[in-house]
Length: 165
View 1: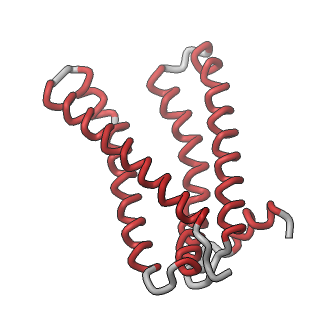
View 2: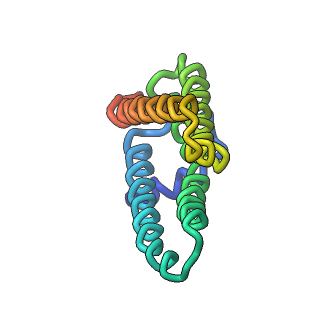
């Protein structure tokens, strides 16, 4: 099995939450996901000056670039979740359901905070310099920063921890 087969195998098993995933399978999926994600971000960033030159509104540029990045994220969402659950089944079979539910809830909260911070209404309110909203924006940004580090630690745990396979 070549390394790219581990990546595509996650898409073939995107409905399988019961089986096990080896460290190698998980690691190569994450590796190829991050490589693809970086390429998409680079391409989106490289086309931003062309959008500015063609006089596309600055707000629209942000939404175009973020839309491209979100499409990449959404394509990998369900295969990634299934792979995380299978990896947890391999590491801690007895506690995998509880840990997965906590992780899923954590990710939903992180996603909602990100959507709130990026929302047009919130950005407009910040521009009007309402002091309470500036403090709230700072607190939410700090919270999502900390949550990103916790999430990274969880991924490192899944990468490093040995399982049955």
